Amino acid sequence: MNVTVQQMEKLLHGQFVFKQISFSMLLTRLKNDYAAAPTPASLANCVSEINAFLSKYQAIMAPDFAVIEKI
Image 1 (cartoon, rainbow, N blue to C red):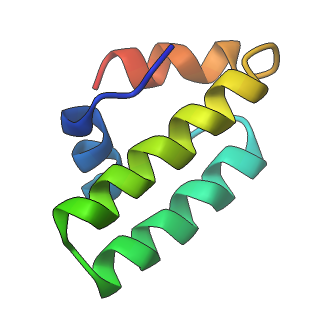
Image 2 (spheres, helix red, strand yellow; image 1 turned 90 degrees about the vertical axis):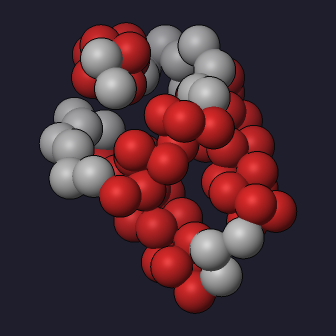
């Protein structure tokens, strides 16, 4: 699964609950980074990092994919 730019914007501005604490921690860090520099380049970096994380840990992220897909 790959997160789109539109989904990433919703993740960065929304309040979602995920089962994997490591994913929640990554998302919190990305929210802080994006809040400090809300540029298209920063958003693209967030998308890249989220997609890399999701591809690496897809086996444990299955329950959270359902939440992301609904965004």
